[in-house]
Image (cartoon, rainbow, N blue to C red; front, top):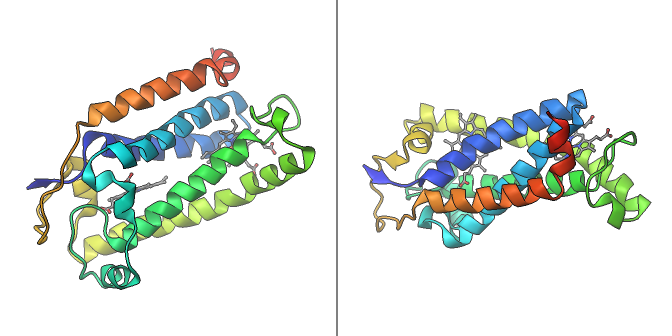
Amino acid sequence: MTKVWDGFIRGFHWLLVIGLVVLYVSGEEEWMDLHFVTGYGVLALLITRLIWGIVGSETAKLSRLVHSPKETISALKGTDNRYGHNAAGSYMIMLFFVLIALQLISGLMTTDDILMEGPLVAYVSSDWIEVAGDIHHANIDFLIAAIVVHVLAVILYRIRGKNLLKSLLTGKTTTQPDQPIPNMKAGWIGYVIFVVLSVTLLMTWGAEPFLALF
Ligand code: HEM
Ligand code: HEM
């Protein structure tokens, strides 16, 4: 068994799943205080993941997400064998980062035209606010489509005999590619960065909606 996913990447994934479900439901139900507080939490999570992609474990590195078309095709055929994300999965993950960032940034410039406005609304023109609102409404469908493809891909790999989910849950893999064992970092460092960012965001932009929850 080789360790491929550190504790932060594993926690990041499931916190992201929970965060996005809460954001979707609270957005649709117009529970705006919860929506804003969770939005700042997911913003802190994504920024931490990007920092972790520079200072974290080798399998978390953003530089390892870029692959040649040849590697991507062999990953789709199931013949690509490596520690960490395979070439096809890497493009899916980059797409997630872009779609989630777009949803977060557009949210920061969106208003419900009643009580709540994102913290950047005050700094942008009314045209931008309208565009950001349109993006915030439309992009959610692309995000849902990407999630469906992602889960189907995990199921397809399972049918082909590769249990990616088990590796993501345990952090370990039994596959032994012809590659050096990846260098891992302690996941708690990632959580410290996440907590510092979350608390900072909640004490600034998030203070009002956070207090309104109680
Ligand atoms: C809101 C829904 C979801 C989102 C946004 C999402 C997003 C992601 C992201 C961003 C990664 C990359 C992790 C990283 O390197 O930071 C990932 C990996 C992964 N996800 Fe999800 N995920 C979702 C739901 C699920 C579900 C429901 C499953 C279980 C069936 C799942 C299984 C996996 C697995 C197994 C990996 C590792 C893939 C690999 O080995 O390359 N995900 N996901
Ligand atoms: C990945 C993160 C986010 C997701 C998935 C998300 C999702 C949603 C959804 C599904 C809606 C309902 C849209 C509709 O009725 O068509 C919504 C509305 C809204 N969101 Fe977000 N959101 C996110 C982040 C944010 C952030 C960070 C903010 C601001 C801090 C924000 C501010 C708003 C506002 C003000 C509305 C109401 C828009 C209106 O009434 O027209 N969102 N969001």
